[in-house]
Image (cartoon, rainbow, N blue to C red; front, side, top):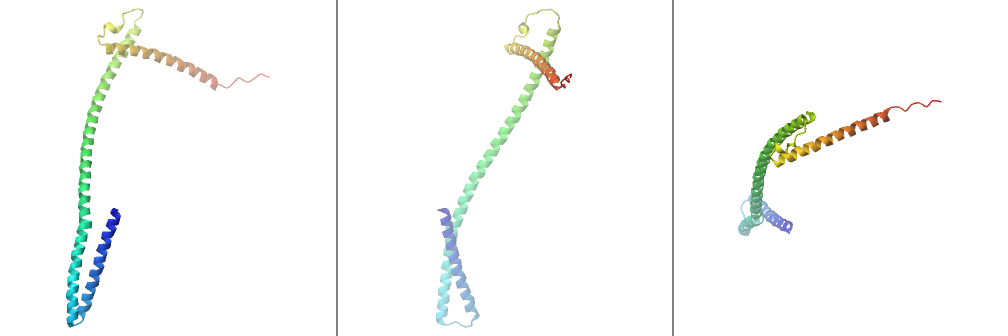
Length: 186
């Protein structure tokens, strides 16, 4: 529907321009000839009125079809630009929040890494003590989170030992498969 309206407006403008061009050419021809007759002068006057009427009509069609649509497009563009600006500001705020959370997470990761290193060191010291059996480290660490962490670290240590044993066993099997089979004695 909009394209038909636009096409109709363009046709109206083109029709007015063609008629105005025709009148202008007629004026030029008449100017070349000296002295116009009464009827020709009246025709010229009528053409001037028609030319003025066509110019006003052309301006009206242009204002109705083009200027209004242009203003509507400007309003729509303004709304879109406001939304783009709001979205950009929101993304900047999200970016700042993400950066702050990232910094906080890095700090927490560093703290956790220090705690884990300390716990590993403590576990290795406990393992190296000969036969001294001491109560579990829960009495040393009053926090339940640290207790859970210590227990979890002990479980991980056991799993790592099992994994190392499995890897050594797999390496022996692979080495056995990679050796050429002994040549049969015939």
